[in-house]
Length: 358
Image 1: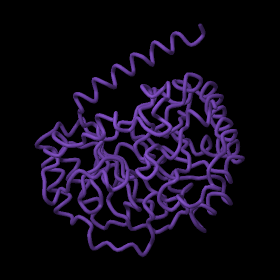
Image 2 (image 1 turned 30 degrees about the vertical axis):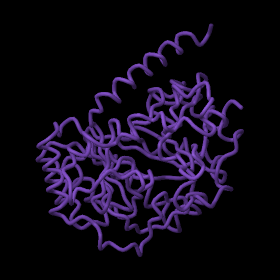
Image 3 (image 1 turned 180 degrees about the vertical axis):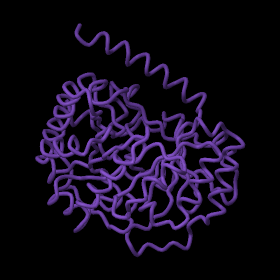
Image 4 (image 1 turned 45 degrees about the vertical axis):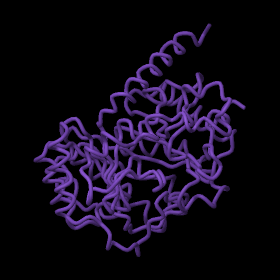
């Protein structure tokens, strides 16, 4: 019975998930600062571009007022704010906003492509309360720039070094999106991220959403996905200096759950994770389709929306259809990450479990 201990742990995790769905305590909040970006990556889930219109973005005061009301209604110190985009550093008022977030008590982190990170940027981030930064590095130079654009590789490396040099107790993380062209880069990438001295290396898959929706050739085959999982599992087992983790929300079965990341799978969207989109829309993960937005901070108080809405997220029995209808592991998976749900097909766009074991 080699899997019995893990089975028991997974069962306990399942019970814990049911409790979390009932209590739905907010502890993580995405703020999509902008859809403007200085790159136009081939896989962007939000289809961001340098020419993105910014007329609908929340103003400085609207953002600050929103965070003030959230701090009034929740314990700000217990809510991690993840600032995403587009490219957050394109907002001229970013540090004005993060300074106020620090005063209110919110810890915050940022996802950046690194191109706008200058020598003084890390200090500004730390001064206004940043606790983590995530820099995108998607392969070695050739494959990274094929995905993200010319002259984007060296700036990402430079930004990583600047944040590491800044010191402090903050987390410096590299996120790498793995696809059919850069899978073979993994051994070299491992050496590079070790050299850069980051705390954590987070590996993701290309998702069939946004700009990547019509590029199925970028996705890994089942065999390639298993190769990636085995790589992560092997390197986690022997590396006690840097955390290596599979960052996708996906159920991976007994062989990989608890082996390629610190916890077992659960999609926290709308349960513990909320989101404020660039235009004030209230949702969860920025990659989830706009049909599942719950309101707008320009019209409603975030806490009221969080308390009384999000029903589709907290009771996902309606998703037990299509390939999931008779699935024997649905109680663990609950139809995979919410961002992969297809309303057109009435099932997830991808089943990681099937890729690994069927």
